[in-house]
Image (cartoon, rainbow, N blue to C red; front, side, top):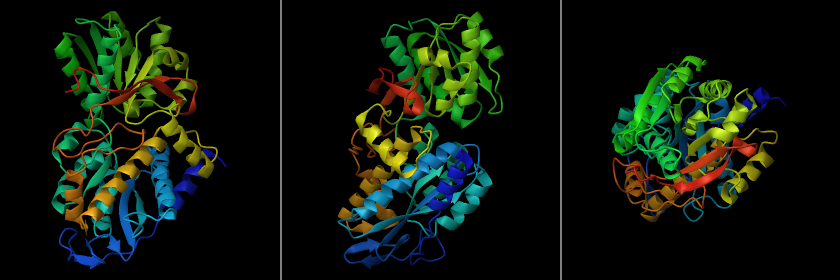
Length: 411
């Protein structure tokens, strides 16, 4: 089965029907009911809990999103087989919809999904989360965004799994400073996408540059830009000691190839979304293996916790070329499970009950997949730790260099 067929098969398997819970026309004004001694409203019907997943199964991030969503689905299949949640009282269903990485599609789908689902286990994409944030807060729906943009922290219902994008960059640069690969006063480059995804990373570079008197050389690019020759050449001329990439994997591959051709020997640093295993098979692959460092919210597959999840996923979906979205999806589902369990313990599985439960989560442990997460304080990341990784010919293309790691400037 080729890659396209596998993606379509997984996408089809993920689209699950979900029963409507008793609710009025507005998502946030349903009448509470009671299932046994647990208060419920939207998204809970009988012994079923429905969680919304608004993702990208056909757009530009479809390969990653399919693995992410597939891991979330696999988690709940395993959990339901073991009895579900809340002492076996409830089974959990995923209501999966495809926005195709189109903001208007996401807005339209959200409007229909919010009347059917208790919370959103996934909304993928920085533009989609930004467009929906006000409605999510108005509707009182706890949401796990598949995004790490720091602006999402302004919404107390956005439940980010991992450090925000700016903190990832801080940790990468602090790690280089700690390892004496950078020194105070050095010049560094930062190539970043215009818009929230890239400019969030630039916040981190500016913070470390200010703290250590680094000269920051910036290059803003469009998501359609693929040739980094001019930018890397200009940065070489200014003597940069490292280049941060807040882009997708295409510009990273180009930057690595240019750096190798020009004889540069500087680290290339990347956010979560910057690296893809396929970059190791490009002309810049050898350079990446010796010079790339990336920050990720979950441990790589050479660590026991992630290796165990990878084995389960490959048994379900053989032939997959894995990325760390698999471990990330599993970790996210486990955060959601702990949220549901906390709400059940308070006997309040309503929308407001989930809001209250989220605020009480001070130590969310995913058994080594992600750093311990704390959601009790509004407006701050749940963790300031990242896994620092090196590129390697290994499953997922990455192995652990250090972590969970928190740099001195990650305050």
